[in-house]
Amino acid sequence: MRNASLVTEFILLGIPHTEDLQTMLFVLFLSFYIFTLMGNLLILLAIVSSARLHTPMYFFLCKLSVCDIFFPSVSSPKMLFYLSGNSRAISYAGCVSQLFFYHFLGCTECFLYTVMAYDRFVAICYPLRYTIIMSHRVCAILAMGTSFFGCIQAIFLTTLTFQLPYCGPNEVDYYFCDIPVMLKLACADTSALEMVGFISVGLMPLSCFLLILTSYSCIVYSILQIRSTEGQRRAFSTCSAHLTAILLSFMPVVLIYLQPTPNPWLNATVQVLNNLVTPMLNPLIYSLRNKEVKYSLRKVLEEMALIHEK
Image (cartoon, rainbow, N blue to C red):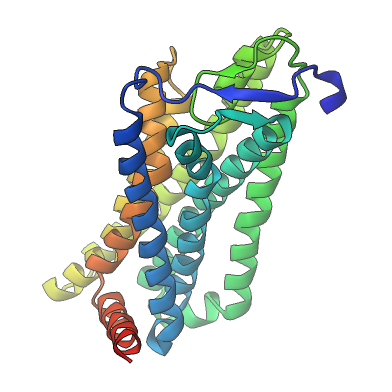
């Protein structure tokens, strides 16, 4: 694949129209990145350290936190590196890696949200059979399946993009290597590949979204059958955090990959929100709406404070 290309490195131009804002953006994005890492690490610690949270729902939330740690780490370190005044160059292999891991982790999260919706569907619609249906074995298979299919999707999209020859311009008009901007630099007709990529990138999240919508339609119907107002409130409360996270995750995909006429500045802004802000908000969404997670987090923070005092 690489032998067909004369380009050995690319130059990341960054977010369009922000040439005079590098210092401010560096401080802002570094803050987002640190809060993202800290928030998701705390969620992981809270779940792992509390036996009460060793259930399928929190097992999948654990995996989501791991993805939210690595997802922004695909593009943020390099972006922070050049925003601090260093080189904007990225090697050919580095660019391939960025594109692969971005789509691998993004697709894995997409599949994971679908699995989490299925988990809530079983918990609310079949509560008496929940522990049998969502056994440890089933949870492990579902968790591995999200990564496996995410990897397959990422390999397909990366191969599709980098089978093209890159022999001329090497300036990427973006802050990381992604499919739309890389296709612009290819020394070949990309119209057929753009259509295949469009269908592939669009079909996967659309399929996941329809499955999630089906799960939640059944969930809402089951909740409305509950006679107790308190029971309805608790059931809706359990699902509301997941629905909020889904909307924050799926909307950027629609805006970036399915718009008829791409807007580089809008795409970069939405990608920053998707790469940094959403992974940072996920721990807040899941912890602030959940008493058990808040209790476990409080215990973890108290233990950390005691260790620090010693």
